Image 1 (tube, rainbow, N blue to C red):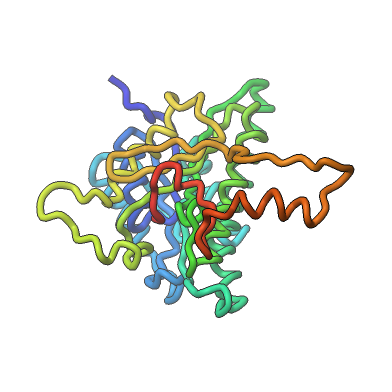
Image 2 (image 1 turned 120 degrees about the vertical axis):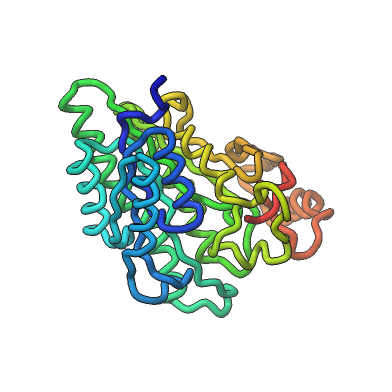
Length: 312
């Protein structure tokens, strides 16, 4: 019996460690040939010199298990290096079928203390990095579709976060980037659907070097798989990359520890109409202030409240 991703090729960014590595291994297990991308910097803040080790080790593990894989150590936040990554997959495997964007860094700071560089660097790696690879993969699929005169096979899985859904006080750069990734995903999904390509985003909750502070108080279990292990997230990525997910497009899914939640688009909670041509201050005060009267000072709306989810 053939594997779900047999004959397909994939690129996974940030795949030398943590979530990206687990996702690359899962795609390979399902039959895909994989380009493992990782810039290899040791610091989770993007500090330290680039290193081929993480990407090479993950690719070697896939090959040792009988799969096909090669490493790419470029910086996906650089447009030219992102193009080289997509070109490498096409040159090596004949085409690109699946793109999983996962690369990211953290530079946490309260908004009143954040430097311009701390803001720019996180937006650059997360949001621009997602755009860069998507831009060249999308062009590849569009060209193939036009040449064939029919839709082709293409899958994009982007990585957002519950920091975008529920807020994250010390991560305004990260939360903004992850919200931007959702917007990029839905726009891409609409633009590429006619070419046979789907684009979806996940909000994973997993114990990695990126989240070591978030889950510092949650001990690893003595037996069995850690509920926060990246291996809980990888199967969803494998599914979204597969032919079975052809009908899943422009979606946002929260995933962790044996749970997948499909998020809805924001809905109107309440609606107020002016009794004259336009609102006055007094009318808005009379309508909106009572509506928010039960909110505690500093309390914000969070879409994740619907599911009782916490930041991850």
